[in-house]
Image (cartoon, rainbow, N blue to C red; front, side):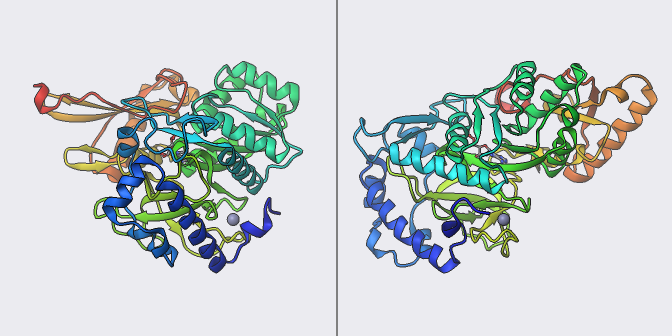
Length: 436
Ligand code: AMP
Ligand code: ZN
């Protein structure tokens, strides 16, 4: 049932105690880094004063800006020859955020990923095809070492080249796959082009999907298209990468591994802690990282802690699927909009395909949102009138959700740009006041 039964079922009181012990050790290490040394001195942080895990709230936050400003070595707690690997986040502007790992960190991370995969029902007997970028992105090596630790046969397939992916699946009898959700729709298209049906022509049974926001609707669609169960995997490079929180076979929220991370949810504006069940920004602290611990890191990811125990018997609390970011909010005509709200509406329409793009533009009469939506092939060929009706229906429903009337443009399947990595859902082409 469990990868590490004792830890995964640890009673809540004991988990708190373990967290406190590990937090104090982590503070003892963190103070050796230039950044935390200064921050602790300024804020008067003393590890010994913490007697209960909730007192973590007295510590200052760490932000992505801090990481960028102290790039590359400002958070390192050991001499530069201590770490054995580094990874970066997938951000593209300015300094990337870099995280260094020593041997212990890599070992702990591999264990967390093995635990996560086991929790989602993957077993040593599985053939696991890891379809994502290897290299600086953490999904490649993160899942590679984790799935090896579990004992599965791992195919380091890397990203792209769908026909080759399909051949690998057929040659080696792949049963489990990790991929980002937007890619899986493309992969399915390649199956169709080859006249194949993954439900009939492969042994696939388990998917692990994550690394980008997606809705329950998208998950269900992936499950139907491939005839598999798909499990949500949450992680971020600042917290290693994959293996931070993972769905168990109940598929009701993601267990966050509380022996290795402290999870808090805060109001992103007031920064006050929020009670269980309320949506806010997830803040994470590493508890088992040595080369580069991070304290109260503001992830910008919006979620909530789900109340109550999970039927699987794990005691580690669950977070809900990520509902957006506190920093990808679009403001159009004074309305706050999250791209995922729009996606949720689009997914209600069976006629809608897998790709869409939100384009913000400045028109004579003000800023405007255009949503380009790919429709399924059978819908696109033909009747203009039906397409008109469909775009009006989508427009109304989106309006009901976001309070702004968008222009809906239905486009041919496969015609929108597809990124090699994470999907790009928003293009902001507005000209702002200073540009006029
Ligand atoms: P990176 O550090 O480049 O791997 O990016 C991490 C970010 O990807 C997270 O902070 C989230 O915003 C996003 N992300 C990762 N996993 C998920 C997931 N399962 N659902 C939604 N967003 C995710
Ligand atoms: Zn569970």
